Amino acid sequence: MHYNQATKSWSLVLLHLLSVINKKQFTKIYTALVCGYKTLTETWSDELPANE
Image 1 (cartoon, rainbow, N blue to C red):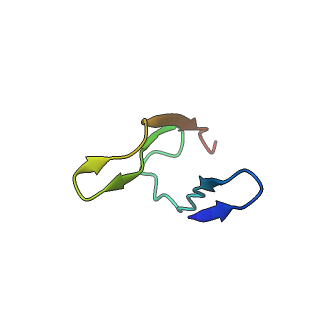
Image 2: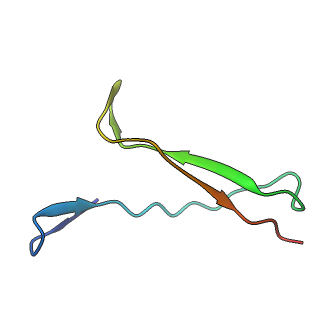
């Protein structure tokens, strides 16, 4: 987490190395910011391309 003084907002950068079983298929990821059991943000989704 990083607080941006100029915009008075927070930024989250997620760096994660995935171990993909089938490298010929895309990988779908879902991300949300949570605190304990409380979800603080919407859920983002994205697809990582296949490594053919």
